[in-house]
Image (cartoon, rainbow, N blue to C red; front, side, top):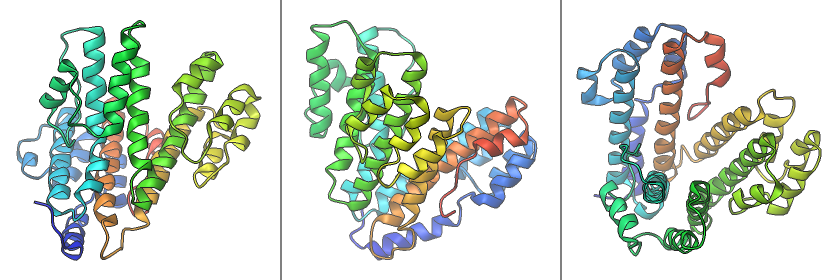
Length: 330
């Protein structure tokens, strides 16, 4: 049950913050073998009760990640004094699952879908909504996006890319419309990074401008016209053109001189957003530390997956270090 007392909620979160893996433990995982990395996780109590049954290797690590994220989502829902705001961040799972179910409806297939946990809606409920075309229970931006996709599918061939763009755009709009300043800043910065990634990837593929225009998400701090100009302009000018708004400098640095600019922008995105979340970490009477803890656990999971995947594939420590993300509070 959600709490009305923010001070109590923050105190609960502070206790759980002590269980975050942190840079020192993560460094030990990077430097050790796959089995040693698992021992670091088990020694930290990562995954809670699931740790007692964890296998070695990637499968065991993934089970621990899933268990720890479940604990995180449950805790956030239990203590949040602003459920509407914390649900906004949790709903990224619902958006992912809606995309999966809608694409399955469009394209068919009987493969078990790869779903995310932690959303505001049960996966079966989302599946039923998509199957029955009954979206009334969803937030209005998602309702409108899905109804628009339904209308478009009656007149055009199935387009999975359009599904992702429409639902991601609706989710960003939910963030923009939030009354919380941090949420607005977070989602606008996220949009700037995602539109930059679309630019880099589609231009590398030689896609026409019309394809890029259709892929653009609702503008964050960088307007649509800026992206369109950057798409058509010389590549060496892209970084300068996109140096707009709070995240502009991070985008510029990620692009300039990068052999793999898209990979660098992905890393810059994750680092920028977790640092943004960390600005309210020491608030005593707001929901900021709760949202920050949620995002911290998700960033931590990305880093653990990176380490364990690299160990499984025999990649050197230098590769892991190059791809590693910043952790909460750094």
